[in-house]
Amino acid sequence: MSNTQEHKPRGDLQEGFTLMEIVIVMAMLVIVLVTAYNIFLNCIETEKKIEELSVPEKVGEGILTLMRRDLAGAVFKGCTEALNKQVFVGLDNPGQDGDADSIYFVTTVDPTPREENLADWENIRTLTMVGYRLEANQNSAYTLYRKEIVEFGRQDITNAPGLNYNVYDKVKSLNIEFFDGYEWFTDWDSAAAIEEQQRIQQQEQDDLRGGTNSNIPTVSNPGAAEGDEELLGEVQQQAAPIPTAVRVTLEIYSGTGDELNERNGQPVVRKFTTLVPLLASKRLALPIEDEALAGEGGAGGGRA
Image (cartoon, rainbow, N blue to C red; front, side, top):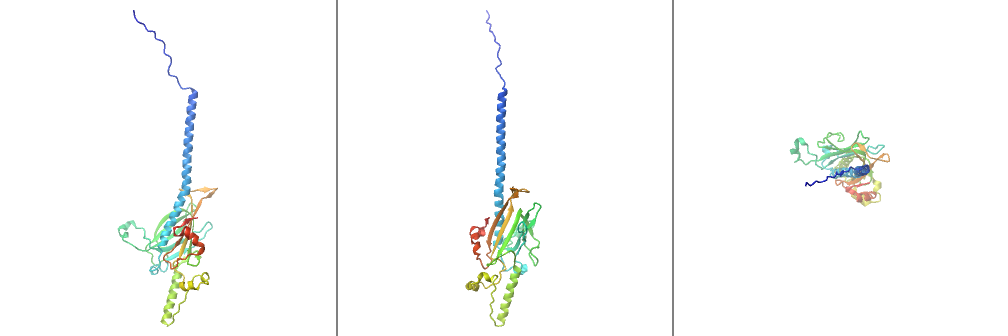
């Protein structure tokens, strides 16, 4: 006898996906992709907002820190002959959208070494003429330039050749004010003050030769010191070549690349201010209305 096995036909064990399953999978995939895209857009928007807030803040404070460093080293004695009495010059340039002031002064800050003779520059410790000015650019804004003048002979320092640095190209305005110990001025010229000092010194020498001991005090603003004879007796000096303090107000646009950030159709503007006492000046007193500013920002500055 032979064993025979009956083979039953095998059923189809592999079944395909139904249309409903495919639709569900596609819907889930779409949801995942849409969620990922929204997260990507949110990341871009968050990054943009962070840049709008942090970048102008860092730029503005960085510019003021640079200017404070240069101004803190402003000097006067020993520079008048080499500079033809131009040791500190501030030019007022008002405009419709804000001031575009400029300033030039002698400072003890070391100049930037030139690459062509770097070895020689490492051993040089000299005075440097530093200037800050604005120039209009193609983005309806100003570019702030810092200029270093090492060889400042007997020439107009505002036009003297030097090394220019592009500090920032989205500046709206730069306002610089000068305090002489009694009041604020929008411009400053050390040449006039030095000539007045030389005139008084020459007059005192002539009086001494003639047997007269004449001491003529000259105060820049006698009305501010009225009623304070003791203070007048201590000061007894003419206008100083270097101001007692300098106040800098800087406005910059917020933007990335060549584009300016806007809010309600207007460019976003950030304002920064600092008050810098000049150690080279004989007087360091600040007016009462600026004590709060000196306390908040002072030489360290602050944001408005």
